[in-house]
Image 1 (tube, rainbow, N blue to C red):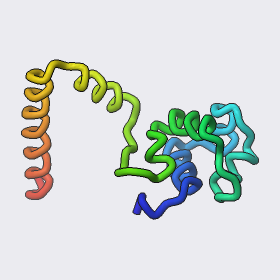
Image 2 (spheres, rainbow, N blue to C red):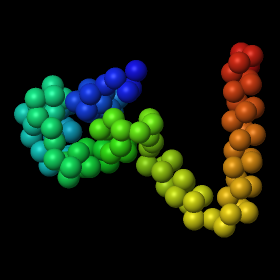
Image 3 (cartoon, rainbow, N blue to C red):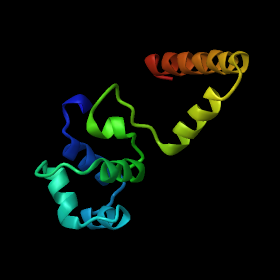
Length: 115
């Protein structure tokens, strides 16, 4: 479903998820309520700089916001952790992935069996 959404629909969805009005997002983004409304309705496309600010405020990647690539909507804490993991030596990074894979597998198994 996310792949079929427009840039404006993504902005609106993420804004509503934060329970912000267009006016609140506009203030945080150093923009106007009218501009936010036009972005959400698809009447105008934000500049790259404005889109980048919106992505940061809405806890999404710019790629996700503009609909390219796989769903890359991550909160900032997840992104920080991913950067920390990427900075580790190969052996330590591989150990983390082994543990993470096991935890994810166990979680999916519990979900599948309703536990």
